[in-house]
Length: 158
Image 1: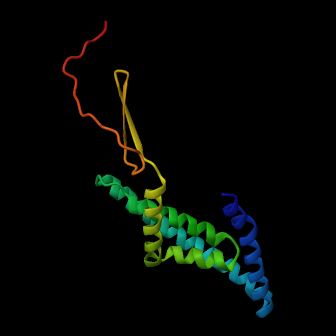
Image 2: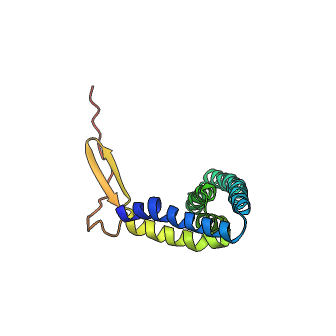
């Protein structure tokens, strides 16, 4: 985790700054500044439009009784794209625009779903009359027997 934070907050800004300075020296500094501003504005507008479209798709999937798994992953990736596009830099802008293109987002989404299935543990617990039953969908949960039962006679306390 420390390595990821090191890359995110120290190395990435250094690389971005180096690329921006190289671009400014190779072209015009005002061109570089304009490029950063224009990509930020255009990127935020695109992310906003795609975000609203994804929000409407999530609502329609919920209203039809389906779980919008695919659309929720799209929403997360569009949010990340928006954050990357308002961050000044060349690498972050290229990555952000790539995440806004649906056919480029599809393999990233497939990898993210596979990673989530591998790394997250989903468990449910139900309590009835003080007895708790748990069920797990994780492949690493171990073997446990789940009993299906029903109440034959129920006493009501006065």
